[in-house]
Image (cartoon, rainbow, N blue to C red; front, side, top):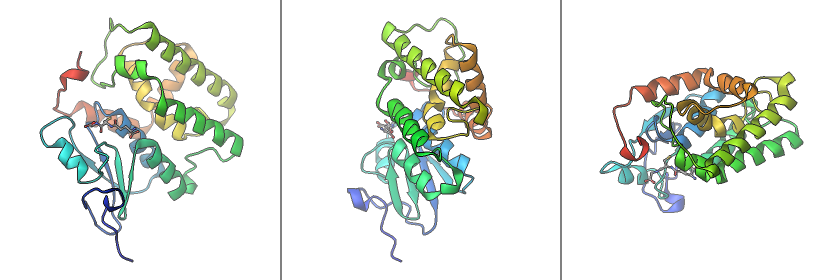
Length: 235
Ligand SMILES: N[C@@H](CCC(=O)N[C@@H](CS)C(=O)NCC(=O)O)C(=O)O
């Protein structure tokens, strides 16, 4: 079968046309919250893949990303020549590509709800994301945020508490077993931890479950070893 050059379908330049290879292109692990989401979901499938890390906001970063995707953003998945960009689109693709991994809940109702939860993160929580940027190195008191960001935090806590209460018997994650919903909120777990945001005990327990996942531990360890310092995320 002919391998279409990655990027061709959406106007990008060919990149990594290696038959059979699966590559996830990510930004800095310390800062790139959108990269973490599909990286975690893909890691949880157990499927082999290579990671290409492109440090963001450096001379040449944008050109390197555009070799993979004309959209110019990470994450990008290149799977045997197919290019998928955008974190949630990649997660949806992974759920279809690896059905045995159960990345969405099996029951249609729970699956629809999990998609709502994931999309709420993908499209929302702008104040939380802007005012508490992901910076895994941070472990700090005294960070200040607005009432709008606190409202986002409150909504996240209510969401997580309600889902945990309903699915407690099925496992430690939002829908019991790990799902894309958890992957989408994994960077929020890291943000709440970094800024020592007060949370109810059940939320703290859920955060511990996410942080204890071996791929999360691996991501955090690799993030802490990164040399880059981006001023806009270090305030
Ligand atoms: N909606 C996109 C957002 C992707 C995004 O904003 N990625 C950031 C890094 S976390 C990026 O590539 N920034 C580089 C740039 O804008 O030049 C997704 O979900 O993947």
